[in-house]
Length: 619
Image (cartoon, rainbow, N blue to C red; front, side, top):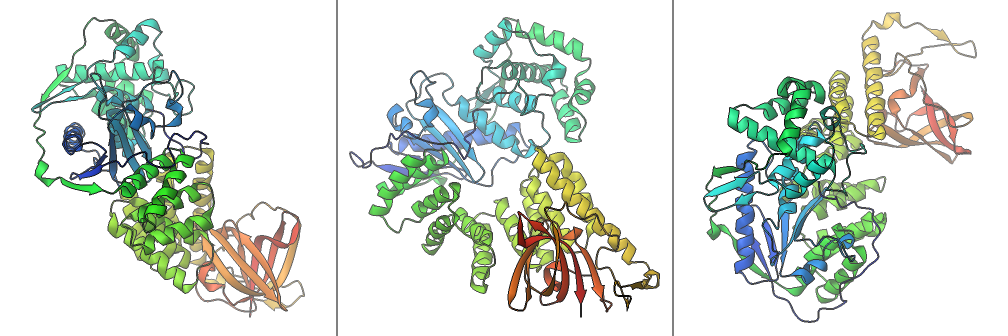
């Protein structure tokens, strides 16, 4: 995989001049699946759009089950020459002696950009673009696809040669072959188990033995399947998708691994390599292309957005300030300014920029999405903000029905308010369908199911989601919520027993009171204490819940207010004093205005706030 662009890199060089030396003529060509922007004549961006549509057709034929069209648009910046490309490419490539790029694919969670130069030379000038496009198509399978096969397929298809009536696939990489002949091959048992944390995998080192051997094995198996009319790679992928461990799956699909290792060693030493020639019509209807001239400010707004996502924040901000001087109502520039502030953690400023983009009737689904998400993150919503958030998320979905985060965020919005839960469940299922490998959407699904009083279904979702957790934090998130769901399920089962089995227990004062447990009949172990234990009596106010199971509230008494919280409200011990509640307690909606005795652990040495241990409701 080419080096990914991470969001938190620090940038320090500035190549963009603060003003244009001379006006540039930019054109936008929209094909059915791509947006091409270029500072060249109309013929060249039309040709680029045509080539990318052909590329899409080829990969669709090669990967008929793949999600060919991503949820976010692919924007191609096709610039005239090396100088124009250097004004936009990552700073890491600007140092003396670095690789001279012909193109790159920038993948971010909410954007897909391609940068390429129109004067690129070489037999495969856009190999990097094809490599990353392969990754984009396989991204839905990244949750289970072994890393060697993921990279091997990208290496295999990066040298694709698309012609008018045929396609050439599998041209060998000279660099890979030379490296494999100079170095010892990794044992296949090692290759099959390499993951993102392995010392054999280095994103910054495309010349590593791991990449080369992944390409060679993929190429060997593709050729062998073609010649023998077998489907070993497909069989292997099917097995690992069913959670069979990679080595067992490989032995089942490929046979004895020692024999495969010997065959691979012999394969990389041979003199010639087989290529695939596939007759494939990739005719593209250019009459469907839409061409429009862009003003300098419009073109610069797009270039600035690319720079922002490419970690060249200083350059992006300089260009955006210029755009806003020339065109104060440019919604795209406002959106990118919001993104820059958001990335730096300045949420108040980010919200202002996104709000302005929305008011300017932006046609970007991201402006509406980020405005809503940041507003939700700001805490308690007043009625006007609630309406704005809901409308903005619905607009984001309308503008881009394939953007999964908007569905998830709207489901979270309803879950926080404990309303429209059936719709919330449908919304988050849409997000899961659009992005099956996203663990966060599975957690949202489980939380919504818990609020719908369906703990058994939530447990099933979380058990299936466990395999998607990659980091310790993700594993912990799944496990904590699973334990909460199991405790909730156990309490429901106990509550279904006749009430006659629940005894009357004496209070500390020797008086008789009904001790009815609410939603947690089987008392769970308390959360780990963070300080001394205290108690407070008063009226519960301002109850706020957020996912996964966080609750914040205030206890008011004699004009004093005490803020308290719980990281998992399913673990709070609920009881009732001197009355028997009817039905189950829903902490997020039923506590407001009730009188209670609340016990809590002091947090951070502050006796005025803390972590809730138990709540005893009273009349």
